[in-house]
Length: 234
Image (cartoon, rainbow, N blue to C red; front, side):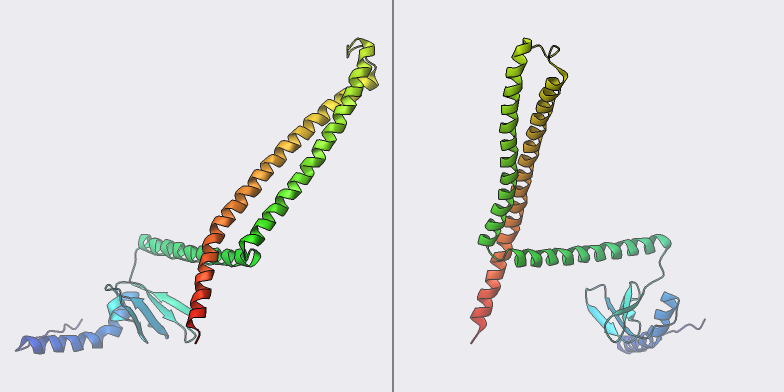
């Protein structure tokens, strides 16, 4: 391997000569660091100082880090970087996947917020939807309570009939015993149903409360944007 030496008579001349030599050797250094021929495209990276750099060839300032190669359309063509160990490559890939997942989650969150604003453009609309959902629960609960009233009347009738048998269920005929058991099970079933609907009512209120907290921020942000746009008009 040929060694390059700089023996300048003056420091300023030496610095200039070495700088020119390093620039001339940059493509070769980039190729040797990645272990492959340079890929045609636009190279981009962020150097150690946080500067975003672009070039039509591997960037010398980013030989120690990954560089992204873009197509003319701006889409990613490839990613090149320094020689990494298997462990380092796994860490880089894990970070890339985590970043992509975070971006996807942010995109999905924005999509949900837009959908929420479209569905509930105002507090009035949101309150109406809450009332409608709660009314549906109240309607089925009212039907269950009406069924309980009917069952209680039927139970009262069975109790009166059981008096003829000295209130001894074992002396009652099979039909009466079946009726008494049917009413008992039906009453328990209606009670469980009402309890489930009470839980549903609480879930509805919790969901609408959570939505309202988010919507308040979204409505305020939307109002600020509208006010800013109105103020910018001539």
